[in-house]
Image 1 (cartoon, rainbow, N blue to C red):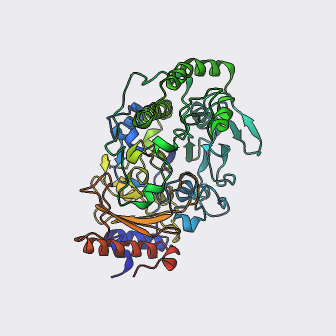
Image 2: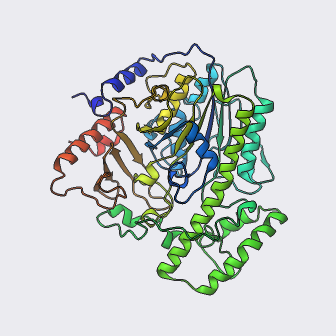
Image 3: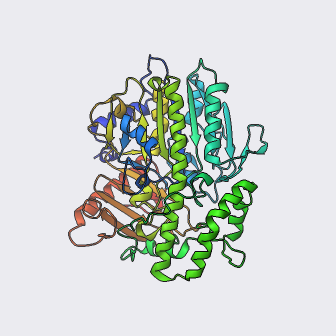
Length: 522
């Protein structure tokens, strides 16, 4: 059997072959605009259109209600910079050269979808978080924050390579700049691609002072596997991202006091000291009573772990609140200007995030909460799909989707698949992607998540942790959705393992991952 057939069945294979021969269909209609809103570490379970138990995101829900919500959207490498490189290039990390946040600099000379859109007559712009170490290329206008950016009175790098300070709260500022470009700076005669890239909701979750008092009277339920013991999952045991042990009281939870120290105290104070006197006064008025109460209680063990969880969730949700409101501002502008009928609006995150599942925060693992990413879209005229989309898509699919939307021929080396057939169909596409591939590289590094690769289909997930470790994991997502029971090597799983090994081998061949030479699958 040809190796493609296990990842793409016949209809999808024909589509892949057409991409390989650069035979994308060119639209004859007026080119569609693209507004692409991406946040950082915004996980699907913290959007009420996906999960209404905790979060309330009415503006994001507007997109899902009136457009489409992808229930099976995934990333190829769950960490910020590499995820963005996959997005822009349409290629896995081993092909675009940006593997991790610690050693890599993005090669801005390589082809990216904004460059192809520029050649097709689009005006392109990006504002906010970039996090690829090199400066943006392929954009007519850009202004980005250095590294992760600051929530308060942040620095921005301009196209003149100057660094300026913009007073205010970052989520509002990025939206202000984006709307100003739409209203006053772009050429209204040209189609456009605007990328609004927020720092929110990245660690350390510093909310706008206007939202500090939200959720303080709420006690949120613990995830069912908050006290996971990581049985039979060696790599999970050694990861350093447990809320109980690794979430910093000062940096993450703002319990700063003159007589207290932590490894990240200095970093927190550098963020705090960016505030102006009014912001600082509001911040102190809110946090000082909480700080004094916390240290007076001398919490330990489960009481401390659950206290940290509650503060974490509340801080996270407060940052989500501001983000949701600013998404609403963008939607309102597009509606008022009658632009929605000719504009594709996309909202996603660079990856998912753990909100106490497995006792964790952060991302990196191939496990569901960080492998999944939220993806919702408002569709322009001519695209018929509405409601939930169940087909499996990945962030390498954005580039060919936007290129095909712009009438650009998709080069043979693009590894993603255009989602336009999904968006133009009223019903699910038969013979779509059968499985997807994932590879995480950033180890040794913060949070100590081991290097691993794996394959996921609509029921099973097979993972290999490698480098200084050699362990396999197999999960049945139907019977074990929380991924607590590694069944690799257990009696009765032989055929499932064989099938998934073949899918993994085929994926590594399809995407030409050189790791297969070091760890061949026979």
